[in-house]
Length: 485
Image (cartoon, rainbow, N blue to C red):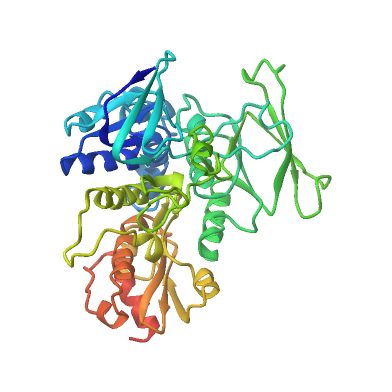
C-alpha cells in the first residue's frame, strides 16, 4: 500500500458538488485532491439532468410548435429518436470525461482515479484503483464526501431478476421500447415517461402509490400533469403499487424478453386488469445515498444512510470537525443546483471565508427556498414550501392562485396554454414562503420567486418589481392583485 503525502483537502466524488468544493478551495490557495471512481462530472452530467433533458427537448419543441397557428401545419412526421440519442451522446461527451477533467487540473486540483473509503483515522482516505492498487491519502484540514446517490430498487419479488431500468439505463438507452412501465410518479419517473412516449413508445404506463403524481408538490400540479399525460396517451395508475415482476426470456420478438408487472390497488392485487406487460420496466421510486462502501462504520456513522450535517455541512457525530458532506449524500435537497450551493458553503467554511458583514459561511437556502423544476409538459416549477407544508409547519399563511394563461404573454405563445400560478404568503411577516408555476417554460419564472423568498422581500415591495409586457411573468401582477394589493 502506497502512502501519499498530505494535502489540505480531500474530496471524495467528482460530481457537480465535489468538483465545486475542490475548485473553490483550490482558488483560495489550498492543495486539493479529488477522488473519483467513475467519471468527472458525476451522475448529472452523464446519467441525470443533462441526458434526460436532452431526450425530453425534441418532444417539448414539437408540442410547443403544435400550439402555434401557422407553425402547427409544418409539424409533420414523427420524432427522429436516433438523432435524439446522437445529440445525447454528444452532450455527454460519448460517456467520456476528457472534456471535464481540464476544469479541475487547470485549477491545480489533483485527480485520483479509484474508490475512496474512510479508514477510521481522522482525515485519512484509502483509495483503491481499478487494478486493485491501494494508497492512503491524508488531509491536513478536511475531508468532504460528495459521493451522491443511486436509484432505489424496492424489494418487489422478481424485480432484481427482471434487470429493470433505472435512470442510468433509461438516459443511456440506444433504442425506444415499444412498451414501457414506469414505477414511480415523481420527477424522474414523470419526465422519462413522457420523454419516451414522445420519442415513440407505443404504450407507457406510470404506476404511482400516492393518490397523485408529483406528490410532494402542490396538488394541482400533479393533477395537471396527469391530465396532460392522459392526453398524450400515457396510462396513469394512481394509488397503485407493483407487487411482483417477472421477465420471460423466450420471446424472439423481444431480445430482452417481456416484463409482466403485477399491480395492487385499493381493491388488492386480484382486481381486474392487475397486470401490465411491457418491454422494459423503469424503477424511479427514489434515491439511496451512495455511502454503503464508504467506511462510515469506522468513524461511528451508519453505512448506507444519508450523512447528517449541520448548517456548515459538517458531519454530525464525528469528533474534531474534519468531515463534511455535500450534495445528495447529505440528504438535504437532492438537486444538482443545491449540491453546488452546498459546495460553495463548505469551501468557504474550510477556507475561513466570511461574508460582507463578517459572518462565517452557513447554509441558508435549504431552510428558506429550495427551487425545483420538473421538466414535463406542462412544466412544474416551484420553490419553498407548498401551502400544505407551510400550514403543517405552523405558519399563518394565505395562498392565492391565478391561471398562468391569464396574461397576454401566454396568449402570444400559442393556443391551449394551461397551468396555474400560486404564491404562499406568511401573513405574520408579509413575505413569500412558497411559489409554484405550471405551464410551458415556467422554469424561467421560478428564480424571481426564489429571490423574493430568500431575500424576504415584503409583498408590498414586490408590487414595484414591474414585469415586462407581453411576458408570462406578468402573472406576478395578477397574483398580487388577487392577494389584494
